[in-house]
Figure: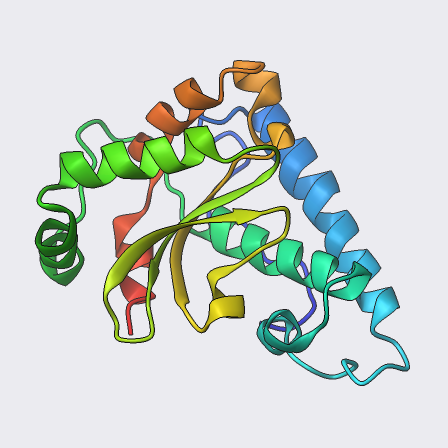
Amino acid sequence: MTIAMPQLPYSPNALEPVISEQTINYHYGKHLQAYVNTLGTLVQGTEFEGKSVDEIVMTAPDGPIFNNAGQTLNHALYFGQFKSPVKDNVPTGKLADEINATFGSFDEFKKQFAQAGATLFGSGWVWLAQDKDGKLIITKEANAGNPLRHGQNPLMGIDVWEHAYYLDYQNRRVDHLAAVWDIINWDVVASRLK
C-alpha cells in the first residue's frame, strides 16, 4: 500500500451498533489520518521515501517511522475488513476449512482469538495471520506491531487500543471483542490468504 488514506468500503454509520459512526469519525477520520500525514512527513528525504507502507513496516527500525507506518498499515487492514452487521457471521470455503483444521472449530478459534485480545497488556493488536509455512496462527502485537515484522501474513487484525472502542464500550474490551464477529467481512479476510 502507498502512503495514502485508504477509502472506507462502507458508510461511517454502516457498522452500528458494533462500532458507532462517532467512533469511525474519530478513529478513522482523525487517528488514522494523523498516522498517514505524519508518516508522509517523516519519510521525506530518508531511505524510506518512495517505499510502500508494507516495505517500511518490514524494514524500518523501531521508532517514529516504524510506529506511524505500522499504524497506517494496521488501520488500513482493520477498516478494510468490515461490513454491516450480520448475525451468525461465519467464514466459508478455504478459510473456514483452514480455521477448522487449525483450531478445531470456528467457535474454538473465536475463543482463542478473544482470549489473546483480552490478555494483551496495554495497547496493541490481535491478529489472525499465516506463518511462513502458510499455517494459521493467532498473534498479539504491542503498539504498532504487525505480523509482517516476523515474516508472517496478516489476515485479520483487531485494534485493542482504547480509542478503537472506548466511546462505544468504555473500558469493556472483552465486550468489544465479542461484538466484532458480526461485522467481519470474511470474503476480504479470505482474499488475503496466500
